[in-house]
Length: 249
Image 1: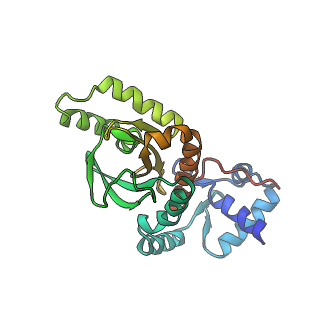
Image 2: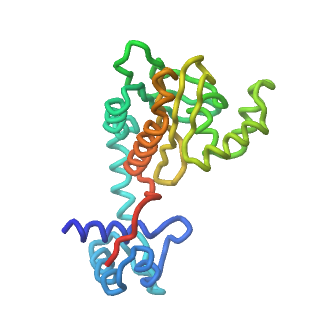
Image 3: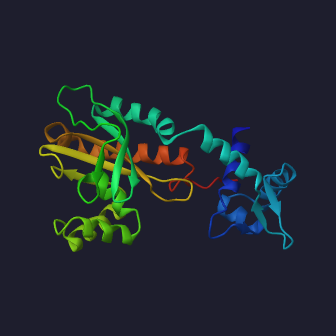
């Protein structure tokens, strides 16, 4: 039964904004299934109203899924969705983890779980910090439109070097995370990862912070923990899984 569920989900995740409708052979190829298996599962989804078959015989997702999505959006906030993973991150690292959302040219902290250590980085829910410095701010800047960078530079009154910052943002996008040391708080270090929503956009991020004397020697392990945490939260927010394996027959 679990195998069937995995295959059905693989079929439904074949559709995206670029290809909202697909022929059977392409769905089967994307899902890694034989055409006969894909056809049988699609027929069931058509019968239950979750998939439509168009006049040209292509398939597409139905609006029935919108009702379920609306229910999910009303049920959970991003804090509810991220909290369990945040607890795991603090347990695994012993450092402070915070959740921030993009708000204009700033980021706003919406949730924090503090390190059990007496010496720790402190940020409070509701705290607003300008983008452009620090792992969290640069991460959100890296994954959003170029116009946002221009606005941040304009508001920095010459304190930020656009060319240098743009190079840094390209590096962040390439590696998939942001790391900073002493940029906002002397002696502090941070790793920030993107949280993607169902559209693939990055309106929020998860950040691990702590003093450099504890952080630096564990940087690789902390980075791996954070990348995994960001991926898991993003999946819960409805993002596609970039690491998903195709389901073999």
